Length: 99
Length: 223
Image 1 (cartoon, rainbow over the protein chains, first blue to last red):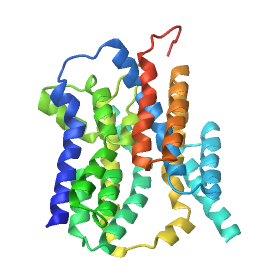
Image 2 (image 1 turned 30 degrees about the vertical axis):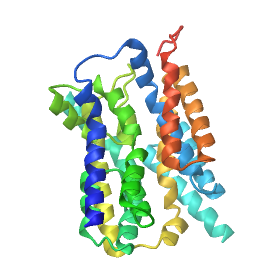
Image 3 (image 1 turned 180 degrees about the vertical axis):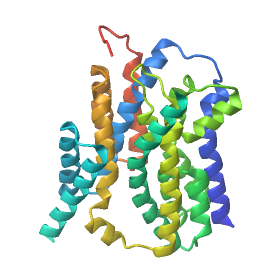
Image 4 (image 1 turned 135 degrees about the vertical axis):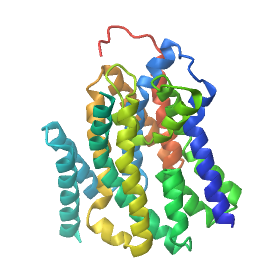
């Protein structure tokens, strides 16, 4: 029962957090400075996601190499899924080689 | 037009969705191993749809009080408060309908829905969340049923899927404006600094503070 209630609590609070601005701010428009700030949320969040994904535990050079390969392929206009598949292959091969 | 944006979003969400599937396998397997059974983790994934909060609750509940575990899981998702504010101007309809649309907020969808004019395409946001939700729930179910070994997933290199997708999405974001690049660099620096002293969830929340440079007036930015 303790686990079920905890899951329910986290689920309800997650809903409320996502709904917070529509429920509290409603249809009122934000001032220009706040809009400029919200525009920069996506790049700031993405950068944070990359850092926490790669450095959340211990830095793993095989993972860095795979992600780097995906970045290079993306810059070379390779489709997203192909670039990520290549990243997985690069990392797997490197781990195979060092193990 | 909105239908086209929704379909476009579904296509863009398939990639991060496949990464979510791998993560969900781990969540389902770990939940099953901790005695949560099959139904509870699947229901949790269906209704909460939040990897960071779900993993946090799963790991902290075993070692502490329920209140502390719930608080940690909620705080780790505090970035959704900020993202909700960012999205709000782009939502349509009445208060409750807007709140319902905001439930589609997840990290990757928030990013792919970002328009060049700074607003967010809600149809694309929802479209991108559909495949991610399907992958997240099905991955949890399969993980709970099959309990794949974390070592096998590591050997196969599947842990690179999320950071690789995020890097590709970031490269697109950086093309938007010089300010986006500055915000990203600042966000990365804050996250890296916070990682030294706290957990990834709080480091991620801290990274969103980089968007505060937006309060400075723009000069000759054209994007």
